[in-house]
Length: 348
Ligand SMILES: [Zn+2]
Image: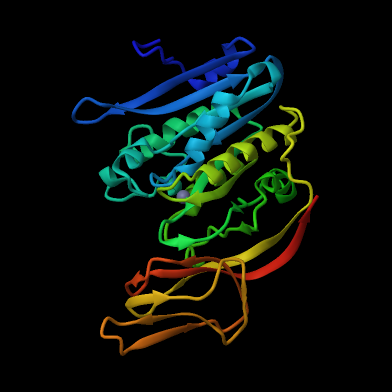
């Protein structure tokens, strides 16, 4: 223990040696700032009275995405180990540097995206070290399910949705993930491609936390909960309830009263950003979740003299996953997140 009463053990050691019915809180140091301030991964580990599965909730990899962190703290603080079978591990932030700098990416490393860095490198740049430190713990524990929590960017509007990626020859089948994703009542579930040039944000998505977990046989997916830099009471309560539902689905908690029954959603097999050619002020009348037919406009970009306008039209039918709310766009900025291929998915 340190002077604040926090444990300085590895999560793996706690799950191995911790007594049933105990709660552990601590930090795993991975380095220091120039001022001497510690860089560390913080954790809460709740060990149930009875044995059972292990659920790992990672609250954020992107520093502005905070709703799931608050939901996770509240969930763990209200969790009674006496009623729990198994173990809940909550790591609030895989990216404490970006959390502190209030930025999506890691500024110390010139804007690296931590979610393209896993499994990381123990003696590398700090973003690689953060990835390494968390992922080594994940691999040592091998949870039965890992949730990689995210949030919609502040410049966009969307609803709660799920994302998974499938490594080649993945031993985990998508159907195994859907039953847990259902707990978040996602309006879409996206199967994200990790191939370069597929219209995703640039970067090595095969270096995502959930992808690397799956590649190592650990069921994992992403949830987009809430909007970056916001933790509204409704979304926080919803997130905490969803964590409870996941535990119930895993058999770790009794059935939850808010547990969703049948959930109708869309399974998206192809998606991309829609990037603006023009610069100016973006406007769209559409809400997330709507179908936009081929030839219809998603929105317009008008220049600051009010004269020139570029109309963004879709050449084929699309489902709107997210739409930009911040009107300021430069050439190349994303104005919408579009599904190009989707089917109904009934999750009962
Ligand atoms: Zn994110």
